[in-house]
Length: 379
Image (cartoon, rainbow, N blue to C red; front, side, top):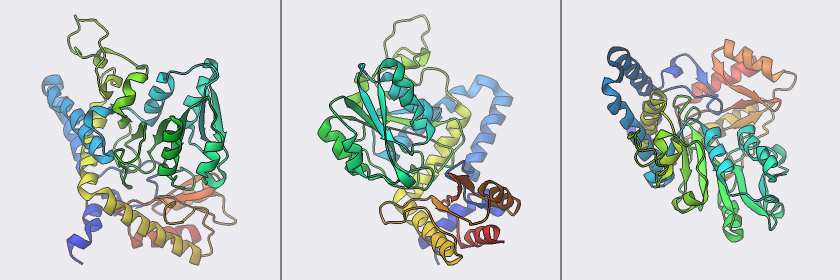
């Protein structure tokens, strides 16, 4: 094959982890590409040698990450805040929303805690959190709408479930939010970087993800999107010296908030993580989410076929529009946590969630990796 039709080999060459590991834990913590690691080393060496002398250069990576993040989701750069993690982004929305006692937010029973606790934490403000039952993470949009009433203000869901990889119908949920005039928040961490998403086509009001999973970037840097028309309705949380239009002029202490999403970047940035995020975003955008999603689904389809032939039941829904990069499966008679350790000892990294094994390959993973995983779980 030529490089043009086998781009994933070039991608794999940029992932040094593949030399040693069959890596199936991108839904947990992804490894760093070689170019991203090089930037982190360069940052560290420059800071060791020069301290703050080149600060402005590294501060520029915040704007690069903002622009690339906007490109990835179809937003404008001024709708993107570069935050520390998904949890921080969710809390900015949950705590900043103009709630009234008696209001409610509708979410799912299967949500990862980061997209549940911030909403439950609003109980002291008289806000009810309604959890729609989602067995195996499978969600019926009609059930979500049935949970809504005249006091519902927000629907908050994950794009892709962290346990089995169920991919929600974002368009169907968006239609409910638009018709009912609800604020629509989506935790996109389990899909951003490998599946296409365009907020110009989907009326999502806000989304958040940090970089350490499918974006294959360092922990400590992520993206928060807030639709421009929604920014002023939210009370800005976490304000600091960098939240105001005159940031850097510390003698001017007026609370004159920036008019874009960067108002959420209240204090100093984690520049080491952000320069890595920018480099990883550059790599992924160069490949493109359309090609990446096709590849990830091909790999997970082949993995499911091999698991089924080995007699290992698959818990994940593999319907065309509901499947993702996460494959949840059972290994009868084996303790998942112990099997996870045994696999690691054999050079295979995967995870265990909800009493099952969870495999999450990226676009650079290949059939050799699948062979190693099958040998590890059946050996």
